[in-house]
Image 1 (cartoon, one colour):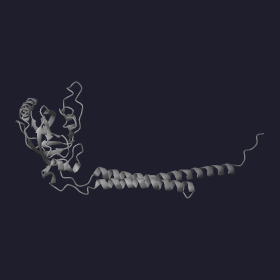
Image 2 (cartoon, one colour; image 1 turned 90 degrees about the horizontal axis):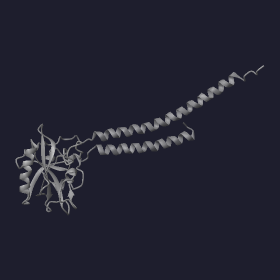
Image 3 (cartoon, rainbow, N blue to C red; image 1 turned 120 degrees about the vertical axis):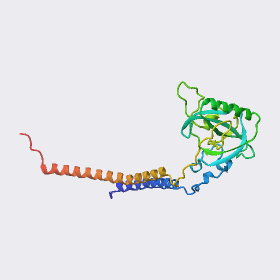
Image 4 (cartoon, helix red, strand yellow; image 1 turned 180 degrees about the vertical axis):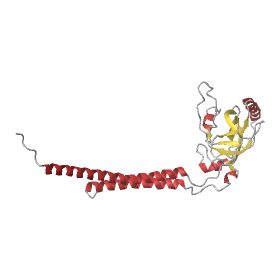
Length: 268
């Protein structure tokens, strides 16, 4: 281990272990939330523009934050999302595109947010509600919307053979593909689950999010992994040096046995 070759190898392992230690410290820094959301903060209604910006992902501490905004419904953009549970009952959500009033918008330009307006037990009830909503949207009245801001569930493809326009996940990205008048449109990634239903729909059950502990255990697990990797770098150096030493000892023993046996007798 004191030979220059193995000292050089040890220095290399020190560099590798140092990088792993830095990565572990970085993960620990991300695991501890230095500014966790105070208990009950998600229940205080905040302006949508103060909580999130169009096109950005919603930070985990703000998922479920109650927000309010105002705007007008875009006609022909009330869409049904299937397979939605409400207090254990399977049914349908009616969603709409809310074009946010420029006075409360966080951007310069047209901005929309997807809103889940309410729940229906059957598709027929959902379609009937859409008919009422379309009639109200035709007069372009400004409406106030209050509800919980929830992250995009991500789009999924419908089962083979079904209508490709069928939606089973609440995804603004998927809804955007069916909306009208979307040129140069800013869109929020999360959606609003409205606190009040309309058009004969039932209110969506959306309880307050469970208060977190201020620790991200996944990041802590990653930090422990980096510490193990750093320790393994030193073990690898020790194991390689020991293997080289054992090989030299084995070769030395073989040479000594050959020397003790002496030369082989000459053939008669």
